[in-house]
Amino acid sequence: MSTQFQPTDQTGHVSRRLPDLPPDFLAWQRVPVYVGTGDTRSLVACPDTIKECQEIMSFCHKHGLSICPRGSGRSYGDAILNDQNVILDMSNMNRVIEVDGESGTVTVEPGVRLVDVYEQVHHLGWTIPASPTDSTISVGGALAANVNGKDSWRVGNFGDQLIQLKVMTADGEVISIDRQNNEPLFMAVIGSMGLLALVVEVKIRLMKIPSPYLEIQITAAANVDDLINKLDHIKEHNDFLVVWVDAYAKGDKLGRSVIHATRWSDQTQDPATVQADIAKSVASLANQKNRAMMAYKVLRPFINLGFHLQQLPIRLFNSFYYHLNDRQKPVKEKAERQMFLEHNFDKSYTVPPPDILCGPHGYTVQITVPRSVAKEAMTEMLQLCQSIPCPPATTILRLHRKDEHVISFSEDGFSLNVEFHPKKRHARAMATFMENLIECGIKYGSRVHLPKDMTLTADQFQRLYPRHKEFMELKQEWDPDNLFQSDMYRRLFVTDKASSPQ
Ligand SMILES: Cc1cc2nc3c(=O)[nH]c(=O)nc-3n(C[C@H](O)[C@H](O)[C@H](O)COP(=O)(O)OP(=O)(O)OC[C@H]3O[C@@H](n4cnc5c(N)ncnc54)[C@H](O)[C@@H]3O)c2cc1C
Image (cartoon, rainbow, N blue to C red; front, side):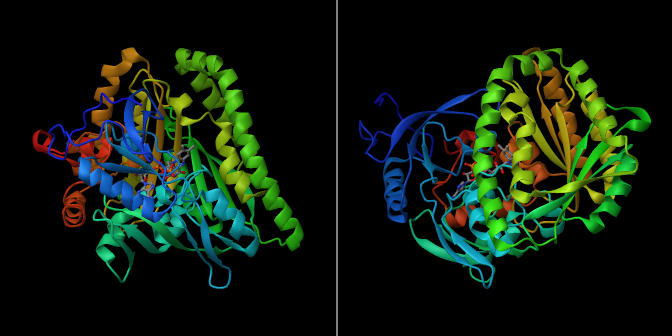
């Protein structure tokens, strides 16, 4: 444990008050960024109880350190970095406190993983809507980033599923907030990226499902127009939608894609089979993930070679995948059913994880496209993506509905999630491209999803998120000393860097 570190206080001055050795509950750790390169060093604490969180908070107040909460650490960039300051790892606070199978609610600590909640509620005929595609994401991380699922166009984002939160404010007090009590704080903590308060308990409204199985339908679309029309039709009969887009196709094939649509199956099974299938899926998720990670470790040199050659292999793969699914026109119905747990989560291991997909110089951008300008905006964004030497490695389209939280990513419409794997020498071309893409987004009224962002500037963020001023006023009210910070906070939320907190 080093004693060389000199922390800065909230005004940027070096604090002299940190003891030579941090107390037992804090340890210096190297904290790397998940996607791309970059290293930070932070004091990391893993509290087990609310009381321990309060002790850490009071230590940070005393020594002029800021706190960044962390869930499962699955955000891509600097939202979960807090260089030379404290990271509060909430993964030990992971109890399911109460499942109410009658009224359909579950109360949990914030570090609990989504898969652990599904395991407890699916056999009772309930689910949590708006799930992201990584089963190990924590409830705290999902709410603080207000994540979206393949069903968010129908049910809203993760924040829309929440009934009540217990949060610890910067003064160490624990308060209950909901849509009646402290509504402004409730609406701002959801999506706050951990910058307003520490969430210590969450009550979630569950949704009734006919079974934990899904029925799957796969359809190809020939171009942007065809895609928008088909989605409008397919939406009527499905609960989940996600679209793989061939970002290389040009001309009248621009936007050709493969639509994956699923709906909850209403074919019932006896309770014992359901329970056994759920247990099997949960076990298989962990095994699948380990197997996939090992496979990607072995295959990494070949995948990297593919990315080194870049355009040719991705173009060939895209073409192959489109034609594979376009053969059985107009619609390919898959007869078999699949467990939600396998379909929503396992399938994400069939593509390499974001750190491999993006490589050391790459990143992901998830940008929304409002419905009213969908055709023009999507066309322009896809054309921009084709103008660089390294078009996206993957392009995924989702559907969304409007979201009312203060820092809110979703609009009525679509989002494009593009993952880039550029080489170092592409840095200048990528910087110009990103400026053009964001300006294009600002012109059409887009947002950029913060937990995946690593590239926005403060100016771009503030133009994309007009309600950031309201957020900063709430921060001033609830966290006047800027206790809650992250590297992302200092990059995006603070305009006057000269007098900014460090
Ligand atoms: C493979 C993969 C697939 C993904 N798929 C999707 C997807 O489908 N949809 C989507 O929207 N996102 C998706 N993501 C992004 C992911 O959902 C978000 O980054 C999510 O926030 C990660 O949750 P986490 O538990 O890892 O939280 P972390 O990444 O650790 O933290 C996320 C944010 O929450 C804050 N936070 C965490 N805990 C608390 C707390 N107790 N109190 C206050 N603030 C807290 C942190 O400070 C940080 O700002 C995906 C990521 C991966 C790696």
